[in-house]
Image 1 (cartoon, helix red, strand yellow):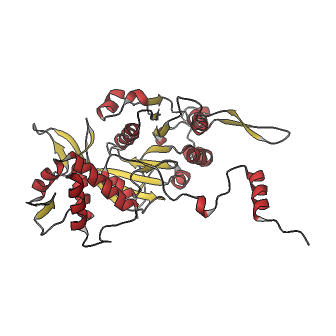
Image 2 (cartoon, rainbow, N blue to C red; image 1 turned 120 degrees about the vertical axis):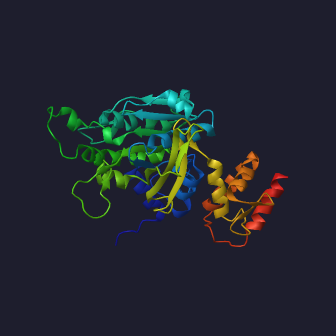
Image 3 (cartoon, rainbow, N blue to C red; image 1 turned 90 degrees about the horizontal axis):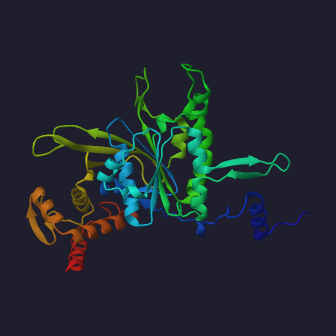
Length: 382
């Protein structure tokens, strides 16, 4: 009868076969995810972890002028604001990156590395490197290290604090199949066929580097589809499976959702972001936020106000009144103005709301605690 392996012996054998740091027990697996804020408190709350997850692949999809690149730049700004040493990488496959416009969104462009190419093979090899297989031993080794390898190792100062990578956009990637094809020759699904292989290599490396990878995508319409949602996004099923978070954005251009200046000129609009897939929180939620074309996401105070009401931190004695900082104010507009005056209090409300949804509290879970929470916030400000 064969001798049974002990747990430690089995662990050593598995580590020898699969490599070091491949075995985890329940107590060693973290269920908390680092996140980079989107710049919209309402969208951060809808995602459930306070923003886009680090170590995961995220997709921003939507129609033209829906604010996909703007939201990605907002994420870059939020990450760069965390630490003066933080850096970001923007892969400009569309050749449309404008540092002047990014600076207007508040992005420190001096800390954004930009790569301009739409060659899919060059992009993925630049990120994950190249491998070679020894013909005799069949051992796989790296013949060229990628950017994410340098992030993991932390030896290259250029990539040591790189925490967010944006690819703009997936739909314009030029695959090796298309590059080698004759002019005018149609190829069947070149991007999905390319991504189905390369995303398997990218996903674990992104996780090891703990980098937020955001792929911006476009929306297509399936001609002839009569039932269900006819819209789809390039990349096929492989991209959808690889993403941990998928946002679909659409502009709301109704009369009351358009932002105009004093001259009546249209300068912005409301964006509705729907969560199509979410592996770090609840899916199928949605959030609305306002954008101005020259500024990015605006009116965050209004989003915080609505969240504070939603979570019971601002009490409503009746349908017309709000209790703001201990004072009863009639009318939403007046209450919002009073709420927005105290910048320190706004940050405290933001942190409190964030703590509530990160700890699993949902609106209505603890009814009757609004007055206690508000009093504690007011006492902290005095």
